[in-house]
Image (cartoon, rainbow over all chains, first blue to last red; front, side):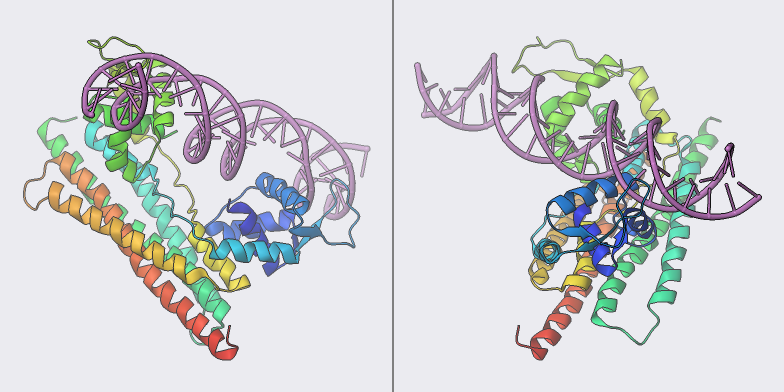
Length: 187
Length: 187
DNA sequence: GTCCACATGTAACTGGTTACATGATTGG
DNA sequence: CCAATCATGTAACCAGTTACATGTGGAC
């Protein structure tokens, strides 16, 4: 039940059409809650039916014609309610950890390449976040809104930092194991 | 497509019935890939149909009767294939970050209590992981399998450590903002 | 015998993904 | 006028969740 609230947040930041939302998700909110355009259109329809958003006038509605939406007071109320409501954290679910655990049983053969690839992907993501931090949160000026958004970005940066570090360690371990095995009996 | 492989891993570690698997998921593999008993029974049926596992003999199959499964060579092969196959990391999806971002727009009222609750939950999880580390991975003796499993546990520990730290910072920030606002206009 | 815990399962629903359909606008 | 792109949408599918159904065996 988070996508509608992600959309409400995005629309409050700036009224938009479905495709504009999709684009903004790709490079901002999507960093911690991704969505495809199909999901977004479906959800926009529901939000409108519930009276949380409305189509901005000034555009004739037709297929292939841009439709922009804005948030209604009821929508802002719902978002505030949801934000403050207690929610349980979802348990971790990570295939990479599962694969390492599986590798403890069936062996690490072939695993190294993909670990390298993941390390590279996380490094790139980290660099991207750091670039955003430099651009959007220069030291000094910070409104309360800025401080909260910066906090969210810091979570992204710290998580990517964690993964790059962890993957480096995992690679050492896996490389050492492959080495051992190669030494024992040329695989 | 990870649940079947989580089950194969668990069954290779030790042949089990559906309910035994459910229990073991609750306190081991489930730490990074949780599953309910309904999912597990459904998946066991599929895995058996595909020839990856088979029912252990020695138990008469009847409703209410325990059925234990073991992994067949084809199942082990499939798990090895999956472990080595390239997989893209799934983008982060976290409601708490989304809520902070929403709070930047609709305000932080009522948020603090749930942040405290999350902090407490993560602290408890961290303590649990550290207990497991003390119990299962004492310094010294480490087989290759141990090293890999320890690596996975370290990921859990480091992630929980990150969250407790991040939440502490977030709480300071949110408390400061609530304080400001209370100072401005007695909320 | 009744109740409760154990054990296996079915059904309906929700949210996310993938593939495809269709109209409008623009550049060549 | 044709192709490419923009923009909105439909349909089918898949994995995970929630609620419920059914049978067995032991405790009382």
